[in-house]
Image 1 (cartoon, chains in turn purple, brown):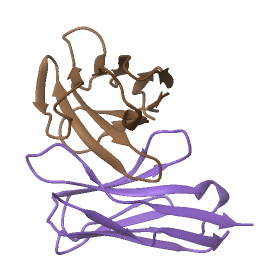
Image 2 (cartoon, each protein chain N blue to C red):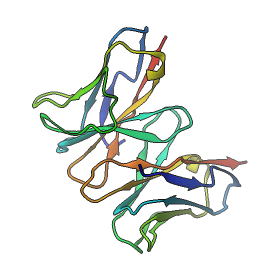
Image 3 (cartoon, each protein chain N blue to C red):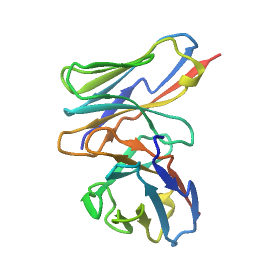
Image 4 (cartoon, helix red, strand yellow):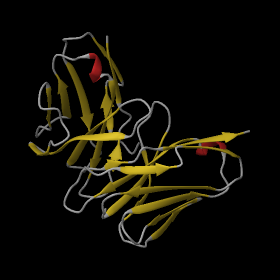
Amino acid sequence: GQQLNQSPQSMFIQEGEDVSMNCTSSSIFNTWLWYKQEPGEGPVLLIALYKAGELTSNGRLTAQFGITRKDSFLNISASIPSDVGIYFCAGQIQGNEKLTFGTGTRLTIIP
Amino acid sequence: NAGVMQNPRHLVRRRGQEARLRCSPMKGHSHVYWYRQLPEEGLKFMVYLQKENIIDESGMPKERFSAEFPKEGPSILRIQQVVRGDSAAYFCASSPSSGEQYFGPGTRLTVT
């Protein structure tokens, strides 16, 4: 089955720094979604991407759908303490509703 | 979490008992999905349902697990004769159609 690899697995950054993380797949996806999960909670949808090459922003977050359709990137600018959490990418194949989730990137902000 | 409701939030069962997890989708959403998450891992798809129909159950174990989404009422994920390996967080998501899925807060199942 499909596998999504996220990197880095974890990041330790200082407040105010920019963050970049990516997600790569062995298969093509038609939709990429980025979620954030905090302890004890469900994933919260951040950004949805539907077209190869698409670049979409949501406040300080920007995500891109890779041209090959096998990867996606998420950037967070000027990080703040509430950005702490685990970020998951998820891919969806056309005609198949289930989401395949990545392994997650844990973001920690050092005071 | 955009209005998807799950209950209970925490459930403790002894080995061999049954677990029933409930999910009420967002208003206007007719697609429901169940996922399982083990500690320190991503979510794994279990089953996709529309009202009164199971559309895709490719991620559901063949035995002891079942799901339904009746015409009236919440979607139910049922685990019979629970074992320790069933301990996990179970998340429900809903969508109005294909694409974006919105998740509930999850049910944390602990099997003792």
